[in-house]
Amino acid sequence: MNLYKIYTVAVLVVLACSHSIAQDNNSQEDHAAQANNPLANMTALSFQNYYMPVLNDAPDEAYMNTTWVRFAKPLSGGKFLLRASAPISTLALPNSSGLVNATNGLGDMNAFLSYNFKSTATQTMGIGPLLAAPTATEDPLGSGKWQGGFAFVAFIAKSPQFQFGGLVTWQASFAGDEDRASTNLAAVQPFYFWQLGKGTYLRGAPIWVFDLENDGYSVPLALGIGQIVKVGNTVFNMYVEPQYSILIDGTQPQVQILTGINLQFINQ
Image (cartoon, one colour):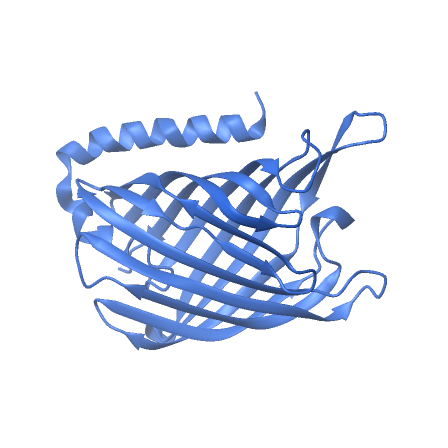
């Protein structure tokens, strides 16, 4: 059983167990509307795994798996939020003999600092600079370039049943390995969450990727399910979300399965 299968089974087991807990503990519903807010005024740690079994414009045997470890920390009473992300990836490609060789390691880390110019109980919006560093341990897993850009985030929670928003980022290379190609990437991530009650919710958070340097793109749609459980001063948010690209060009994932566990630590 590979790492992805172990990870997915673990998430499904936790989802099932947490749902039974939620039947006896309704207090987590008070936190459901903010559990998916990327700008929430709480320290957060998340683990997200993207399994990509089908890659467009690549051999049938090719696949990719990336686990993102993310840490978010509010600053100045929530006026700013720093989010840092590190990817751990596996890229499998067949060689000239038809055998599949897998490359494993750390990818390019990135971080952005958001200035939250609007922060109320029902609306949060922020914008700020983004920096990506060429930290990949293997060439296929990174760009070999320093990249800079910006991130804009909006989260609307006017309804206790339905929340939505989006994350828009842009980054382009400005330094790094001269032998590697320049980068110019934009991404739009709409997200939407429908609360079903007792911590269970439907969700979608696909990332629409636009490779402006190579005229490639991937526009997936997504629908998954999640469970929110509050234990002590920690809000656990666990989910599974299949995604399928309806518009695609270039070497991009056609099918993705997102599984994740987010932890928000409520301020004392």
